Image (cartoon, rainbow, N blue to C red; front, side, top):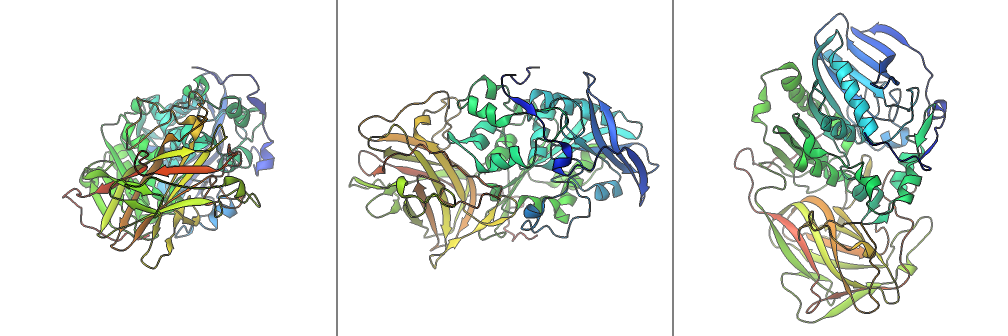
Length: 571
């Protein structure tokens, strides 16, 4: 196993008490038929001890186990600022762990639940690393410990949201013999491209919270993530060592993906589903807030249907599930839901629309007249935080028939920034209703005014990875920087994260291009923000003959015949 490079990438951890840790208090008690065991020591293969909390039915043996594995603290609930807008109904029981299964529910249905503090976090021994080979190895050992306890039936599942989904990717790839199924909800699958360097642009707001308030508590040393990423701005062996081995996952898997998590988890969850080597796998694509969806009672029942089948051997209606279930977003938390045979849906074709700088429209054919449009990013507001303001270029497409979109989107631009060596380009897609108003969608787990989709591109990172890229899904290589040429435009192929959308006749899609975040939320929120930009001159975009700029949209013209009747989704 390759270790995290030493250099300057370890620093003393913050004291556990600074993160609300109640102290090391081993204890066992019984409450409403549930046996609770706190701070149970589990020895890893190298002798390091990590601590877990165990909840299981009192006096019952041979129960399956659910493992929740993440660094936020097995003692921690939802931070108030996050819970306030999450709209979780009904309210979660007191003591619900952050982004993890509710112990009382699962124990009441004959399961044991194990919450683990990874190596080096809180009271667990050792040095803490994040999404590393060491963390995966320890997760493997935890699965094997849980699967061999005298009260266990030998079947272990993993469940949880966000980081607790990503640890499922890493642990499942090590193939622990007692791991029987996983249920990852909303997880990043490419830390470099999806989280730390979006389009090659350093992300500063979400990652700042992740490495600041939410993690980094322990008794030893903690991985200095910020120093690591600043020392490795290009994709290199540092990032390669952390690449998810998704093809090695072989256990049954039930993936859940929120289109309302654009900019954080959407691309990663869909990629994990696509690449996972599991023969038996399912995907639920929705447009809701991720925590609300994870904890909604009927969705918890779907989780239990899945785990009952693989951890208890129950013959239930899992066999009737379609491989993929997709909500085509209309308004916030509404839209037709259809059964599909694959992701992207089998009836998908990419329809090409051409940008026209003269009219600000997206056209079905290349404009005959060449034109330019642009803005001056130097005039974008920088207080209270950097965002595009009115410095942007906008292109609209109005649909004349009912249109469903589902899949990856790409944008080809011909761009220049005279006198500059680089430029940062930000892209959003929005839905505009028949009255000309922007339609807002859930964003991350607790906000209500997000767009349909995001894309980013640092022009010096325009080189594509030929093995990963297609015209509909360009993927940047990030192996070197290529300065802008001194004269004339350069081609930028921008990946816009996958979307689902349902348009009625007369509604419009709006493409916005800018030199900074088009939508930006105050610094206290767990959303994307980019504060260090490479913009020093005006941005100019060419359209029309000679420099055909195009948007490729994933139009779905057919759905699976089985279970494809639209239905309005509810909470």
